Length: 139
Image 1 (cartoon, rainbow, N blue to C red):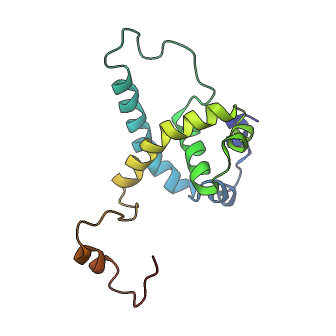
Image 2 (cartoon, helix red, strand yellow; image 1 turned 180 degrees about the horizontal axis):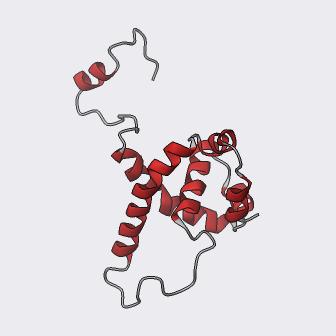
C-alpha cells in the first residue's frame, strides 16, 4: 500500500488522530513549517554538489505531506522498519533511511512550536524548578 493510498483512506479526523496523534488543524499548521525545513535540508545537502536539486531518482515518498504523515506515524506507533515499510509500500531499508532523515526535520518543526519536553538541564536547581509540583520523582 502506498502513502497516497493511505492518505486517501484517512476519511475522518479520528483516523488521522489514531495514525499521527494530531487532528486536521494541527497537521495543517505543522505542514508549512515542516515543508520549509525539508526544503532547507535539501538545499544544505546539495550545497557543495554539482548536481542540481531534483536530479536523480525520485523517492517513493514524494510530498512533504506524505513525509510528515510517515514520520508522525512512526513516532506515534513505533513500528519496526519492516512494518513501517510494509505499511507505506517501501522496503524496510528505505523506511529506516526516511525515518532518520525526517526525524531531525520533525524535531526542528516541533521545537519551533514549543511542544517538545525540556530534557536538558544545566544544573540540579534547574531540574528541581522544572519538577517542583511533584512530591516524588522516579528516575
